[in-house]
Image 1: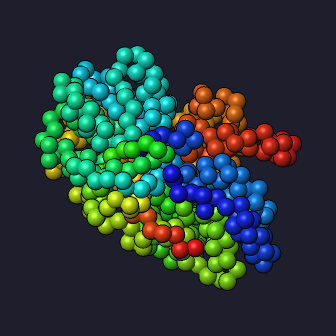
Image 2: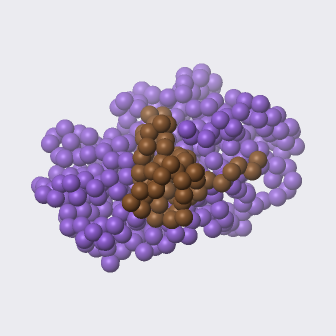
Image 3: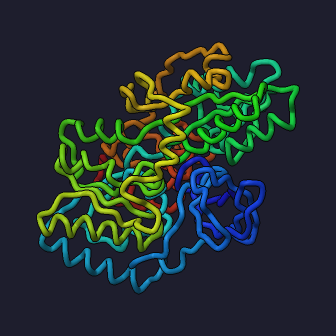
Length: 69
Length: 375
């Protein structure tokens, strides 16, 4: 994940939400603050381009659903 | 793009603040522990305390994974890093945590090969790129981070990686919560539950808190509006005489978490009999180790680990900060002998640490000025 200097990269708080722009070699390519990165989607295997994922330490943890506020 | 704008809407925040002010007129003082260091950081970063009535007292909890690693485990990591032919890879903040023999950064300055990574998968990739070195990943973190280590162990097995291992220090959120809840004279009325840990373990896992200890929990996300809404939900429960687990972070957290992540952790790791938590002491079944089928990638089986227990510096009161017994500014070395540049205790190292959050966002001086003479 791209480090945010105000946050600790170790903690789950560094988990970021990011949109999937492509799938590549079993991983998802996500866009975070204009930078593209690969994350493993072993735990969210049905992730597709356009989905928003919660990502932490190089893997996707969860799909982010549209907010119901 | 981080999808945060709607969760930082000042109008929504003001409305929630007004709701909380109105609710506490009925409830009186409510002491709320935010378990997660990420929440502590967000509260001070966004100045949320200033939007809350004086009846809401925020107490900081133990959920900073950097802060709870004991000095002895840092020394163990240094011992691995100083082994010939070994590269120790870990997250950035972990490199600055002081052990009995200094920090990993100081070990690096002495010649050890210590490198920063953002993912255990990066450490495995490093091992692939440098087949002549053994790459050991110093794994720390709660259930949020353990799945990444689990996936990495699975991939190491698939690849038959011969020069990679994990020094496992993953910890679990429930044992320290129980330890806090069983503290005599506990002064916490309600809990803001961790957000991203819960994306893995699920919000249902906190049901023991209302059922066994009679305190409500609201799992929360990390933006200002999220946290204010979680606090409003907790105060509303109190006003309505309810005591249950609620989930504010429904856009990510499910009641049963992520079963695939839990399965990956269970396949690769198992509970230790006990584990030392910095400042808190030894807690039974509170951490994970690598399971036997993955022994080939377990640093604790591959290396001689000193395993010494190192006492914290006497002046450091991280333990009391981590369990919500004192506020950071009540520690005698806060902001003087212990600063983010030269941390004495772990709570000052990570930006998630309560002391670092207080220090970084200007709370130090204000709190000192508010403190009664002699405090």
